[in-house]
Image (tube, rainbow, N blue to C red; front, side):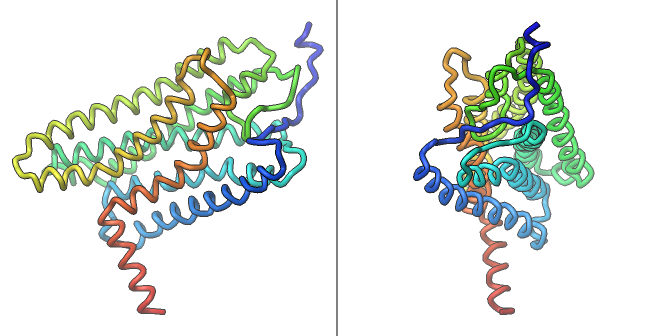
Length: 312
């Protein structure tokens, strides 16, 4: 009977990160700067890889796709969040909320799988260097990227379908700064048990398989590096993995904290802080990690700058 008397929700109100006006203005400046760096740095990496022939390798092909995903999933949230900092009422239409949740989840999933693909690429390069060009052919690289996108969009389709089946009768106020699954489940007046089980299984398959791929790849990589007799060879092999390991640790660590902690420890305020790091900070950090710790990228950047200065 309660479901029959339910008023259809046409929009949601996002509470955001803070209700204080002065704090919101400060956050607007901060996050505008971060988002600007995110877009410029990631698009810069993509352009650099495209222009420099030395970076036309599988590793950098995957990195350019990772940068594209970082720009996309940050852009599904950051522009709306920035606009809300300057708005009195932080409204978002129901349909736009679903669209935001879908594309954020899709590109975040692709990011997750792409990191495991990059781990496999490093495994082949270090453990089977003589077969690298054959194993990681252009066709295989395209298939791996296509698989990552397929898995990401299929997984989030399950999330989205489960979410739109829910009813929202008691309130339309979301205690978050964007439309994400946990706050929507908390807001729903429907029985969310089935949806939570379906989402948990689906998410566990994607994240679990990605984490296992990363762990297996690096267990073989570490074993191979330790067997190397040359100290210089060990340093060189490890240096090719250092940037990726850093990105993996930050991404998966935040992801596991956000979505796989016990429900008894769930706090919306803690979730907001973790979400800021996951949604805003990580997409900015990835290109910086790969450029500052990678000789090839730094070399390509220096060459591009020198060429620009000479032609200018």
